[in-house]
Structure formats: structure tokens, C-alpha cells
Amino acid sequence: MGGDHAPAMVIDGLEIAAERHPHARFLLVGNEQVLTALLSTRRRARAACTILHAAEAISADMKPTQALRSRASSMRLAIDAVAKGDAAGVVSAGNTGALLTLSKIVLKALPGIDRPAMAAIGPSARGDVVMLDLGANVQCDVRNLVEFAVMGDVFARCVLGLPAPTIGLLNVGSEELKGDDTVRQAAEILRASHIGPQFHGFVEGHDIAAGTTDVIVTDGFTGNVALKTAEGALKLIGGMLREVFKRNFFTKMAYLLAKPGLDRLREWLDPRRYNGAVMVGLNGVVVKSHGGTDAQGFAHAVDVAMDMVVHRFNDLIRDDLARLGLDKRTAREKNGATAGLAPV
Figure 1 (cartoon, helix red, strand yellow):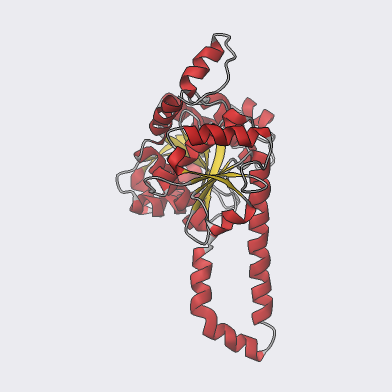
Figure 2 (figure 1 turned 180 degrees about the vertical axis):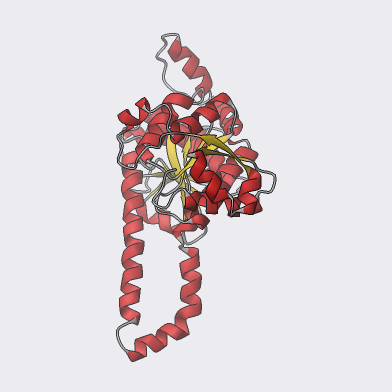
């Protein structure tokens, strides 16, 4: 029931997703009467969906604390279904703050994960790039950055299909002495870990668009600023191109000549292709679709969730955490130990 054009957009997206994933089944959570009427005209979605009635819906402006008290909302019931094992993951275009808060509290973090992170895919000159964290954790310590690198590596393998993705740690410079103690210590641990051969080292802001590495690791404050800056730059360039080609008769003619290339560029940078940010590090798959997307964009968010479920994303994270010794450290912390993080 969440999103600017929901629930019709969601149902239309599932009509596309059902064709792409004919063996998938969807638990559709929301107002049963409204959803039944919409499904009556979407044959594929109707065959793939089961409706779970929810009397309430979380509004776009509802605070997370209010959302926690709404136990009968469609978002809460969807997340509860994942917690109970009735669904393998949840995809929502609803209130981001509510989704993150409810997911953390209901699903909880995987053993060995200190803080879940928000990860997403974006375009670069060399192909798609995974970046995390994008805002879930404003302040991060060494352990968090190491965990993000592990989860980013698994995410790139599952969703992008890369057998050994390269990993970069976002910094103010590429030299080893640049940055604060947190990023330098995280870099040392990653170099000595099992993903050391994939660790490129420090990368700078321009390396994101250049595609220097397949995975960019940073704290949530920096990651969110970088993401919003890139979105604003793309909008600026798009607007400037439109103004240039509308200027006079000759520029309009030039547009006609350049249109095939511009159409390819528009397709390449289409935000719907990158819709579906993932809350990684939870006991269940949680994918956040952009609230303003259309059916194609929502279907892509479902594709991301399907990739993570089919490729056993969380199982792979558990395996990699064990190789780093992070799962053992969590057990020691619970017993009162405070030993520092070290690679195993």
C-alpha cells in the first residue's frame, strides 16, 4: 500500500515480475477489497499472488515511532511474515524510515553483524557499482566498515553476478596515509582477510562514477551525501541538455541526429534500472523501492529481492563472517569480553 502511485503501481509491477519469475509466489499485504479489484485485470499477478488483509497502512509522513505502534499495518504484517518464515523477503515502496526501523526491530541483525547497512546499485563508466552504507548508519567504527565490505562483496556476487568483485574504501585520498584511524584500520584488516586479493584500497569520490571498483564502502553520512549529489548532478545534466536542444532550429535538428545516442544514454541512466535499495545484514531480505517509481521500477526491485533469495545472500554473509572471525567476536562480546577485531 506504500508509494506515490500505490497500490496500482505495485500490482502492475507484480504483473511484470510474475512473467519474469514464473515460479515465484507473492504474499500481497494490504486492503483486500482494493487489491482484489486490481488483480481482476492482471492475469499473471492474480495467479501468483495470495492476499493478506491489512486494515491499516503507514503513511509517507508517519514517524517511525508511530509506525512501531501500528501492529496491524500492511508494512508490519509483511515484515512479520518474513520473521515467521511465511515469506523469504519483503519489497516495499512505503515510508523509508518506518521500513528500516521495523525491519531492524522485528527481523534483527544477523549473528556477527553489529549494524545492518543500506546498499544500492548505481551506474558507472565501467558498469554497475554497489555502494554502502547509504544512510542507515551516520557514524561507523572499524568493525562496521569491515562488515560493510563483506556484505558488499556478497551483494555484488549475488546481484551483479561477479565472481570476485573489487572493493574500495571511500577516503579523502588514495594514498595509504590519508584519512582517519577508522578507515586506515579497516583497510589493514581487509588487506589481511580472505577478501584481501579483491581489496583495491582507498578510492576517492570521482572513482564512484569511474567504476574504479565494483563495491564502494563508506559510512552512512558520506554515502548518503554522495548518492544525493550524484542524483542532483544527473538531473542538472538532463535539464541542461533539454535546454540546449530546444534553443533554436539548428539545435532541434541536431537533436534529431543525436536522438539514437541520447535514447541509449537515457536507457543506461534510467533510475528504474537501479531501483531497489537493500537493507543488508538482517535476518531476512528487505528491499526498499523508491516511492515515486512506476511498474517497471517496482518490478526491478522485485528482481533484486529474487536474486538475493535465490543465491542465498544471508547464508553467504554468514560464511564470510565466520572466515573473518566476526561471529566469534560477537559471542565474546555477549560474554563481556572487549577484545579488538582481528582477522582470522
